[in-house]
View 1 (cartoon, helix red, strand yellow):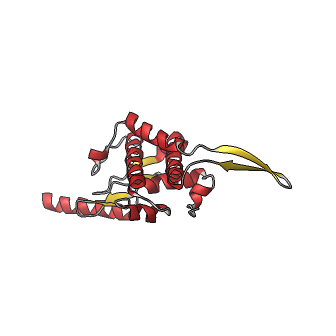
View 2: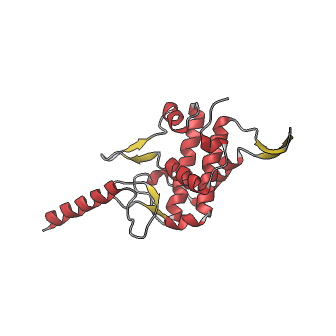
View 3: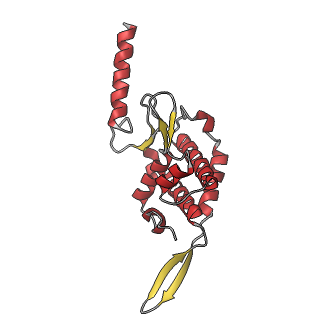
Length: 193
């Protein structure tokens, strides 16, 4: 048995689920030169990110799930994806993909009794299905929860990340995006004068 990431082995907390959903959506980002960096571009890249061995079929399912999650994030944040607009799915298709992934790891309660009764959860899913189900479930719980109202698409130049607004004045996903925005505004003001 492969040593799965802790988030797959144990029930995830709400905060960990939000972080997992955002991290998964952030496996694609702008490279700063007009292209994209994709952490899931190869089976090895996916395996490095996920911590589980991956083949091409699992990687493709993960990439499809990521674009579905990003499409739902764009819909929830009322933002149009910028660089990955060709990958943006309609909400119905994105929901179908996310819900299907979540359903691939059915979980059943099992009672065991040694000295004391103990509750264990078992499923018949393989490691890849379990991982994608965990990510999909994290996205579902995030999008259906109250934190969704704070989801934002970063308006920074060339940034395609999503973030949860942590305080009222937060505008960007990271300080570096804010710096790029200020530099860009300064540059354009100087050019327009």
